[in-house]
Length: 117
Image: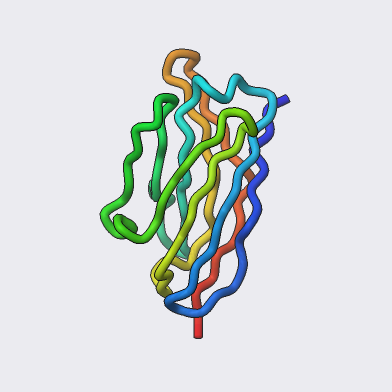
């Protein structure tokens, strides 16, 4: 059974930081591209950041320079460090695991991030 369990969401003020974690189980973690997506009310889900099995990263333009994605193969964990948060970052953040080789795509349940003064 595949599980992606996110944690670390919450309510913060503009300019503050949050660290989201996602622990994966039931997959061969090291062959999956891991990503974080977000969905704000009334908007489509969008890619925030991704990291391939060999550590190549990709970021949405809106978060470049503020967010950092990392992965730890020993702990089956992917982390999104979010700095300088602003109200436009408010959304439900979802962890994603994708393997093109295996044609598999999995999602976590989501964690709410709210940035408000």
